[in-house]
Image 1 (cartoon, rainbow, N blue to C red):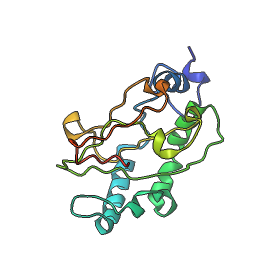
Image 2 (tube, helix red, strand yellow):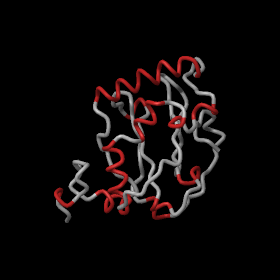
Image 3 (cartoon, rainbow, N blue to C red):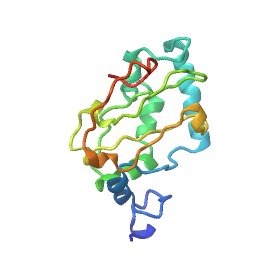
Image 4 (cartoon, rainbow, N blue to C red):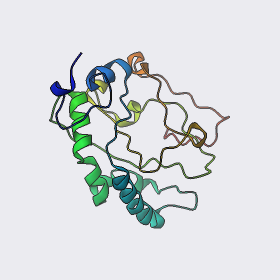
Length: 178
């Protein structure tokens, strides 16, 4: 087992397992605290101010504004360059040679009846090999419970390869992009 002193010195690992080992075994690592509560609150306030002009009354963004906000919103650009995020991604991929290929807002507004059905994100990014790509989910709002629709993962499913997604007529409010 690797000790903390041998790990990436820029990141205080919150797990007892090295990040890459955990990622390869489970397909997911976390939670890892990247932003402080104050940093997250500032980013959320900036997002809410910006979204006021680009979201509809159900907190849905026009698709053109959902994607690659790190290219046009300074606070998102700062998040993707945050030292703790860079350190975690570098540790998982075992390299300092990383790029941000894309970013997006994934919003589920308060009291929304929409859901995100279980799916594998790799099908949407088109990047391969999947074990050399990382998707980092950064929450700006306060922690939420399962009742509100928190993010969940099925550990180890990355080892099954790309699983075929199934559409369902019984889930009309599915927010997963198809």
